Amino acid sequence: MGPAQRSVGIGLSSGEGWLIHNTHPKMQKPVPRALPEEQETNVKRLPRELIYLCSILLMLVALVAGYSLWMMSHSASAFNKGLHILDRSEWQGEPPSGKYPHLQLPVSNVIIHHTATEGCDREDVCIYRMQIIQTFHMKSLGWPDIGYNFLVGGDGQIYVGRGWHIQGQHVKGYGAISISIAFIGTFVNMEPPAHQVEAARRLMEEGVRLHKLHPDYHIYAHRQVSPTESPGQKLFEMMQRWPRYTPDITSFRRLSNATLKFVTRPYWLAQPPSHPLDPLRPPVQAVKFERTNIPACTTQAECTFRVRMLQTLHIEASGYTDINFNFVVAGDGNIYEGRGWDHSCQSFASEGPLSNDLIIGFVGYSPSNKKLALELLQQGIKLGHISNNYTLIDPESDSHLEKS
Image 1 (cartoon, rainbow, N blue to C red):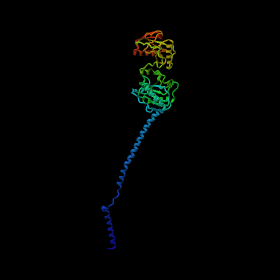
Image 2 (cartoon, rainbow, N blue to C red; image 1 turned 180 degrees about the vertical axis):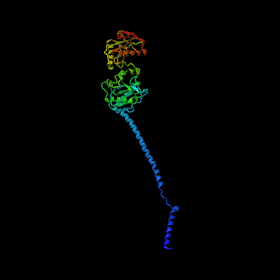
Image 3 (cartoon, helix red, strand yellow; image 1 turned 90 degrees about the vertical axis):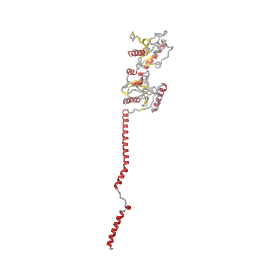
Image 4 (spheres, rainbow, N blue to C red; image 1 turned 60 degrees about the horizontal axis):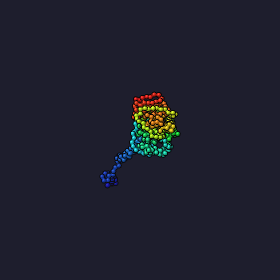
């Protein structure tokens, strides 16, 4: 075989050998597949992308919720910027010892008091005052809780007492129809600081915004509905310049079913009788109105002094065993208890009882005082102290009137 033939033969043999080598099943190499590898990569990436997407959505939801809460709080604070209210847990109030009726909201009346204690200008001191007041109301007065709905500290903060929903015990007969706000301190000779007054004003505005107070609510002083100096002369004078202060309490008293305001003997510091008093036998058949020679009065402090002066004159100068009136009607609109419904008066110091008559004295006689006295007589009839057909002896009218 020549060289050329060998060359070709070798080539063929080589080519055939290469083909046989590459087609043998056991010797075949795997061919790379680009497409399946790319799909496998996408499958691995998909869960991570879902996690990232869910995380972003959760962050967006949290941001929207946080922004909404911020807007709500911001709008509330913008409406009443600077109002800071401490709830019962913050001043460490004791839980109520019993239940009390709820208020019917919105309430149309606010009664302003002072606590007649020392004041406070720091939060820690005001908290201490709150605890002392609550202890006094619960332990000494026997109330189930602190009597006020809210108190205002000299630090310019509001302290929650019974709050907006529970009836207070600030004034007998008025808890169901009013919210009580007490200024911590005594304001007889000094006014409360401006920020304390401003806090009370913002609290009332907040009450209107929350629909706890009627938009047309009225403000009264404690002394207008009860025989007391509260809220102190200086705070009372300041109150009279407030837009919602209401000097006429007639309608308010009608709401409470308490049209008369009595000052009992302990309140005007009456002396005890020098001898036991004779009983008054009900029902009384005759009532006598008598003017006194004591100067008229317009404030409770003045009238208290006048009634005490009357008692001193009757006992020491006239020889009576006590003030010789069953009741005294004074110029401050109060009725002062003398011998009351149960004891008779004397005609002269040396004689016995005045034939079972009821005697009403006047410190400053006026149509309004006479009206109060007539309302007192109507109450006496309802209570069984006065006969329905009583005779009224009124020197001012110079006549005897028989009532039926």
